[in-house]
Image 1 (tube, helix red, strand yellow):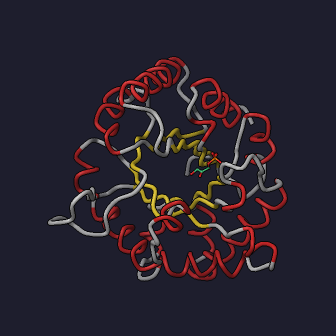
Image 2 (cartoon, helix red, strand yellow):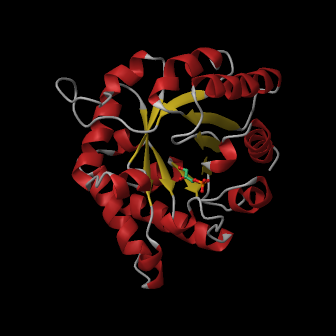
Length: 255
Ligand code: 13P
């Protein structure tokens, strides 16, 4: 397991030229300063996958899609399959992001199927879980997250889990400027690890990378990444500028 994973999620930002330019800045830094403790990942729009993979080819960074179809192939207009993602040279795919759950009504069954498609193609699934503000206000965060884990991971054995990454992203902290406190992040990450330890086994749970996502910025990352059960971050806004994303990579590297 890498000590940290610093993962960007560009969401629906940057045109192709801008994406390539950002990837070039990342590549030139990473080629000169290859991280020793952390793995860098960038989650880009589908249209950027092939070009960004090429730009980052000798940087050690992994390129990720932000979603994939639950279907293998066929008449699904507008969808992109895990097989197609793999063919671009990408190595990972974000699955079950809260924005997909909210705006595309993705069910646990669909998310589970997407993970299966990703694993079939040897892509690392990054399974996102996280509660709404109303859940937290009603102290339902643990039951919500355990239901998401149960549904997403149904039918997968420990060997499959070892190929995945989990991202805890409290919905109330995404894009809001409000982060979970380091204590809140640690508490949920420890809960997720305990849940996985019971569902699978302690060793598998210890090894799985659990990322925190939700308004991670250079000024709060040190404390969040420093928590014992936090293995890095899934970063939206701060991954859109080389300066802030590279700063996050340096923070993980020198913690
Ligand atoms: P922000 O870092 O912009 O809050 O986004 C977090 C996120 O959703 C990453 O997937």
